[in-house]
Length: 287
Image (cartoon, rainbow, N blue to C red):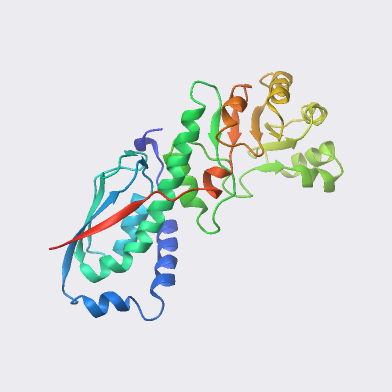
């Protein structure tokens, strides 16, 4: 996926999360260190740069952090989200009131570092399954309140998104099946409730459950915790009738074998829940 194909994060979402993060950091008093050490009219030019290789995500969020405190700040991006980074690459140059830049610095770097970490990890997973027909997708295992940002970062890394929220689609999982009284009962109830535009996916643990699910009008099956040999047989049983998704404890070492079974999608919670922040720093030059 190239950066030009990335749908942007809606501005109201960015403004909301940035405002909350800055309020958390500044509290009721503000940045007492910057206020004590820097004259109120001092300006500065800062360079945001990568300190390790990876994939960039979070340009608009970082810019919003600086502009939230100073709408007149100059933020000039040198890289676009989705772009590869090498250590030392300049990402953006910021110029404006020095106090306000430093007060927003940590929030901007926190968002960009985490989002770039997600994008970088996603790119590694996507590259790992290159040449197969499978696509890597995320899950809802995201940081509460930051799902839109983290799923955007997955797209910046070349991955795809699973459903964003509970109301985007019907996903009948094992607990639904157990409480509803079986796969047939759960699918029948869901189909009666869901409109014609709503897709239905069913999680199955065995080939017998898969065959039962395929007797009904569904759109996808989630093949949960199946070893590669069973996944390959499941794909043959489905025979293209619905979308196949593999899920369950899939990691970087195992994803290639899963992709080679012929599944359409592979969902990996680690894309968002187990990420190392990409090291990005801000260096200041007095203007």
